[in-house]
Image 1 (cartoon, rainbow, N blue to C red):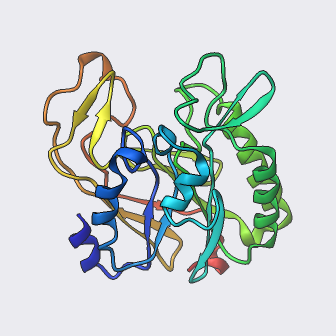
Image 2 (cartoon, rainbow, N blue to C red):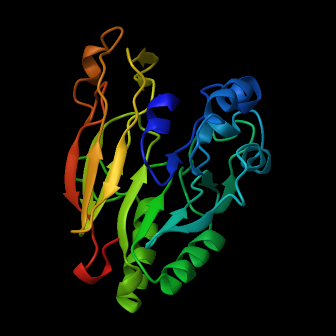
Length: 266
């Protein structure tokens, strides 16, 4: 997979979190021995399992991230990396650390208020289309249901800032976490769930025969083109998971319109 990415003339690589399924302390060395062979800049996003056996500051240091959330500009696009590795319980927002999110009666995948305020400021000062990156999904609800409140509050910030500064509107959201291949929209914003590189989860791991990755391009006419990869399941997932939206051993090819105005294509 790394060799295939290195052969392409891409501007950057996006990693949406979970370098390992048992915590960074166990598997980070093997991850970096491969990932360090990339010959392109990378945007790193921490996932929940990256904090199974360490705290957030250790995870961000291990990934070489400037902060747990941050922004960078590539060409005419502004990339905003979010940290949704927090849960709310008893009215308190708690950062993930050492597997503490394995708890009951909590709301997971939340942004803290400090980060929501920062996101609003960043969107107000953006001068071109914005791509929002996160590990946990943004823009995805159960069929027929409203967005979960922890996602809705982020889109409320996006919509509020977009009304004030349409030049810096969010063009797309990219995330992972659910190990499925799925596309949804919030208003005009396409939200893409990028499948896991290695397996689907349904009470256990159901590995893919081939590592999954995708090449994405924002075209001059305002489209988001995704060229995915496909494999098969090494063993069939359980029958009761057949109704999971996007269950697949592939990342689909797609061409969708990004939520940008004609004057702001990059």
